[in-house]
Length: 330
Image (tube, rainbow, N blue to C red; front, side, top):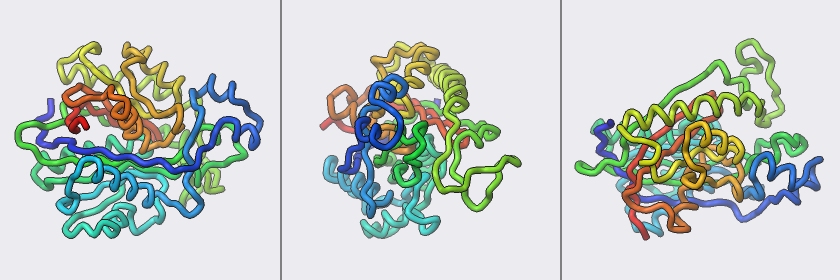
C-alpha cells in the first residue's frame, strides 16, 4: 500500500464539436457501421477543427474543471501534460497552459507514454506531492489523433478521436487518493504502435515515415489482453482486495472488444467498467478522464468509491492505479 499524501480534488474534460460517425466513415473507406460496431463498439468520434490543437483542448478542459469545482489553479506548482500529439516538439504543451492561465510559479513538462499517459501523469503527481516536492499538481491527458490518422487506411481511421481531460491533485496529510500502483514496459513491442520521428528505423526495422500513426492491432491486442489482467491482479493483491471489492474499473478505451476480453480474463464484470469508447473512440491519453466524466455525468461514480485506472498502449507501456475516488460529488 502506498502512503499517499496526494488527493484528487477536481476533474474537467472537453471534446471538440465536430462528430465523425460510422456513416461518415462509410463515405471515406470500404467499411460499414455494422463492421465497426461489431469489431470496436464505436459509433462516433470527436474531431478537432483544422485550426484547433491539443493545447486548445487542454485549456478548455482545465477551464471546465475550474468552473465546475471552483478551484484555484494559480497555486499549481507543477503542470504535467500527457500527449502524443503536441502542438510543437517544443515549447511543451504544459508551458502553453501556464502561459494561457498565467500561473505565476509553476514547473511544466510533457509526458510521452501514449495511451498510458494520463495514469503516468497521476502517478508522477502522487510521487511529487507525497515526496514533499510539490503541493498542487495539474495533470492533463489530451490528444488530437485525427491529425495523425490516415483516413485512407480503414484498419486505423475508424478507431481514433480527439479530446482532453484535466485533474487537480493536491497535498492532503490525512486522506491520500492513491492506494497502489502497477507500472511497466515491454519496449521490445514498440514497433507494433508508433509514429516515426527523426529516425526511420526501430530495432533495425524500417518504419513508415508518412507522418501517420501506425498500428499492428493484432499484436497490440494480444499484448494487452495478456498484460492488463495480470496487472489488475497485482494491484488488488497489493491492496489486500478482491475483485468484488472494486467499485469501478476504468481501462484505456482502446476498443470495446479488447476491454471485454480484459474484463473476462481479469474476472471483472463489464457492468463495473467505465469507458468512453462508444461516442469518443480511442482518444489515447484522454480516454480515461473522458470515461471518468461519463461516470460522473450519469451519477455512477461517487465520492469514496474504489476505482482502478489502467492505461496501456504505445511503448509498449502500461500504468495501473488503484484509487479511493476523492473528487467531490456535485
